[in-house]
Image (cartoon, rainbow, N blue to C red):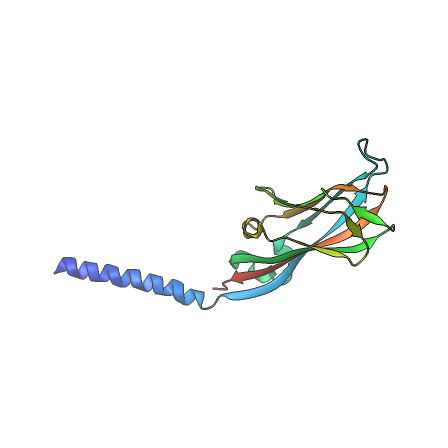
Amino acid sequence: MRTALKFLLLIFLTTSLTSCEKIKGWFNEEIDTNLEGQMNIVSDVDELKSTEDYSINGTATIDITDNDDLADYADLIEDIKVKDVSLYVLGIDSSDVVIKAGSTFTISTPSNPGMSWPINQDWPIMQGTSVDLTADNYSVLNDMLEGKEEVTLTSKGSCNKGNVHITMTYDIHVVVEANPL
């Protein structure tokens, strides 16, 4: 009889703890927001030795905890799902600039080497143009963002003109699930 009573008590305790987790889930909030980072890309003054192109480089950072929509939930985030990633050209100080095929845009964190998107064809750059980055590795990006580390955005490659300054913004559209309890 005592064993049966202990067994029933154990079942009751297990059920009540499981129910608390389910109840806690009722209060989850979904926050639909954009994480943005501005990148300044500069092409070298001198041509590359192997081609008539010019090397380009740029870096930007995003800190998920700096996002106004997420500031109150930084320690309460339970899940992050990336919906899309886009690059927008905000400004350029020259005309007829083309980022060459083979250039890459990379997103990484200190603990994750990240993921890269190659530009598969020449991309004519004008203010207002954009490119959407494919969803092949969004799960890797989800993991990086859930780590709440600073995210580094980089560009490497080449373009057809030297001494060009391009200002771009990374726009990472995410849905974040947080629990305020």
